[in-house]
Amino acid sequence: MLNVSAEVFRRRASQAMTSSNAMRYALDNLHRRLTVDELAGVAHLSVRQFERRFVDATGLPPGRWITHQRIRAGAVLLESADHPIDAVADRVGLTVAGFRHHFRETMGISPSTYRRLFRP
Image (cartoon, rainbow, N blue to C red; front, side):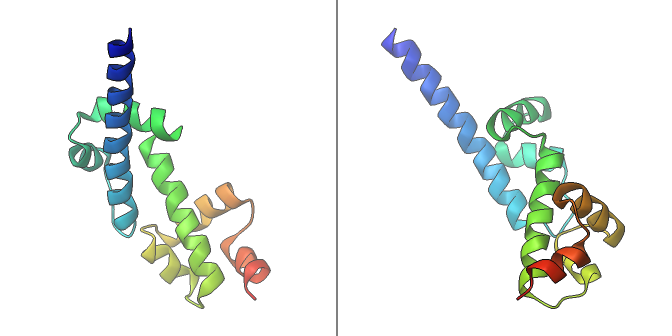
């Protein structure tokens, strides 16, 4: 019984590590187009295995998680710098229209309203 528990723990730790490597890679590369194939390659898994493990680890599919991370990074830029919204969108790997859409969907307000509310 103990060996089975240890094996389950090792497997889950390995799954978390592969997802963690892919997440770190994605965060380091938010500025460019990322594919699930690419992230699966970083994790040394098939696309299907990667997607399953990623959802288990994060609760979100890879594409949605990346979009959320891009919006979080964009929010930090809006709070801390005077970059135009198109420059912020570019830095987080989205088109201006995509950034505005996903920002409003995620945060409940537009990027410009967010900036006005949260800039000192």
